[in-house]
Image 1 (tube, one colour):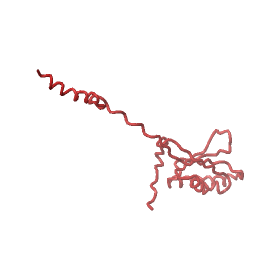
Image 2 (cartoon, rainbow, N blue to C red):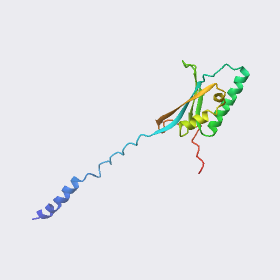
Image 3 (cartoon, rainbow, N blue to C red):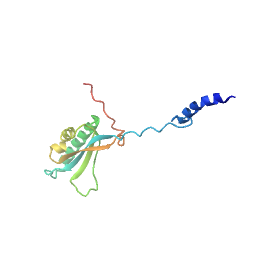
Image 4 (tube, rainbow, N blue to C red):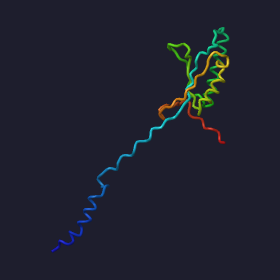
Length: 149
């Protein structure tokens, strides 16, 4: 009788059927990536309490220096986007810049170099803004590599 060889295979069959990974099953999906934040410094440019109406020529010259400062911040990779506000209810809100710097103190120091702030026409409110990593990209302002120390 040939029953003995079949019984000898029974433990192997049980072992194979209990195996968690079978050839016809797909591997479990990978865990979703951990949500991460990245921070920017939001600089709100507000009308200063010392603001005054300037003669046109003086206002235009100051505006040109202001734009020059913002362009310089962009070229240095510090400011990634800047622009004026329109249609706001409170005329004290004049514009905003998003700075790609590590601290609000650094953003404030850079903003305070702006000629319109130095002239007392505007003031800067700096807020650290956390957004989902990769959600905000600035194709015209890629990150600038820090110099080697």
